[in-house]
Length: 192
Picture (cartoon, rainbow, N blue to C red):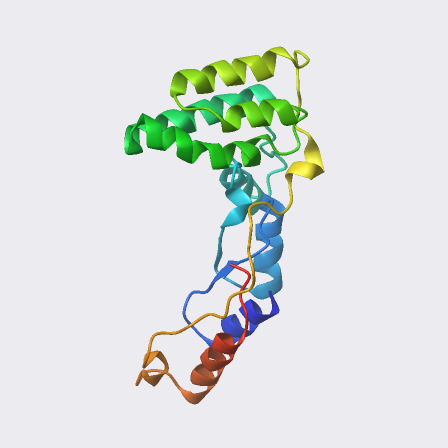
């Protein structure tokens, strides 16, 4: 976040911060700490599309937060599966959904067998049946699990060195300070 703050101090252009936004309150803290004009969310929303509503609430100083129970998450998984199938075709869409299932269910006490079962789905009907089998083995109410859901997710992989296109720093509108800052950014490593 320190580099975001440095960039914001060095330019009059709008600056969007990115990195470690897992909760709405993280977005507020980033904007306060860096002075950035807004935030960009990456891995924090994987399996948590309600994060955006949480950010809006936090930005408006509302104590309301989105904390879905398991039944709400199951409905989001079903909807996501249907949307992917509509976009990509059922076979490809359902296969693509598999990578999201673990993120959606992170922290909920569904068990490894249920997760493995859902990783083998090949159709929307199999998705519905797998979700029903999983749900039937659990208590009637499964609340939001709290902190375990609200942290890093996805894989950042190995740090990568960012690359700028040839001639990028030769812009006639960049002054020396901006050119130096951008050349430093290229020498840093990025986690994703």
